[in-house]
Length: 136
Image (cartoon, rainbow, N blue to C red; front, side, top):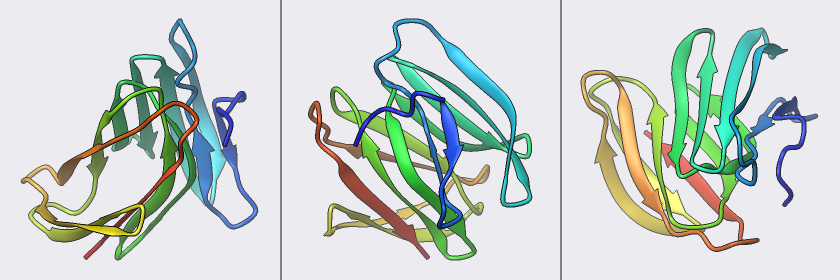
């Protein structure tokens, strides 16, 4: 997987890809339409953040590149790449328990807080893709 040079793009399956973890300076793209929603992305080497219709959707520290980011009523799935281990925070339903699967391995259950944020750590190495699935 390569970084998303255009910062954000829609994919044929209705998912989006975003982020460029190799940038030395902050870059952003606002009002990107996809699937009836407007997205905003901010990205660079130390942070990647995505908003959907003005609401928090994804953040990673340090920055990551994400492909195939797809949300549903049941959760979210995507593939992530970065230069080093990352802390991912996702905006989901508040006070809800989700099962987390990282690269096909069950990582247990995590409950969102009252603001609907769920945080997980993902082990990343340069050039390595990691598949993340989070479902109710």
